Length: 166
Image (tube, rainbow, N blue to C red; front, side):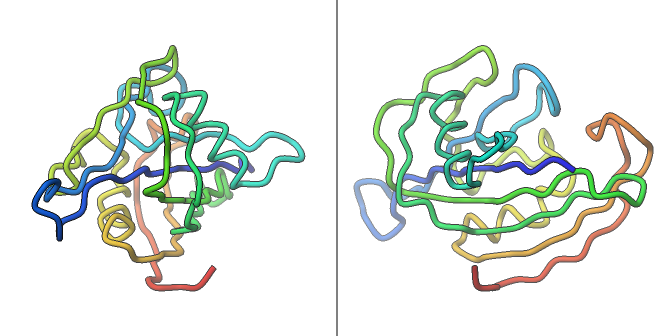
């Protein structure tokens, strides 16, 4: 089983006239699992690293942002052919410094929360990401079939629980 993270930096405030349109930083993956698809910065936890430390490191490595004050927003289990494939810790934050820059692994883009390109993302993202971006928390299990690699398997079912405490 892979333990991984996703981090969703957010900016903008719908209550302020200056920045009325909230945006989320997404990356277009340039290599590896999900290549060519959009997601949040993140990746596999290294031995001895906490999920929070992983999310901070991966965001720095992939897009050059220094994130802080991470809020745990989700725990997602991805099952492939009946076996747990990945357990993912999801974070969001409005606290960061730096400007996102492209790397060999990812091309970052600020995207309006209302215009997230779900048709260019994992099929399950449309089920949990909108709620996470609205400030909710979630625990979910997403089941895929069809063998490795996961990004070529078929999404078949899910369970999702909202507003859990972490």
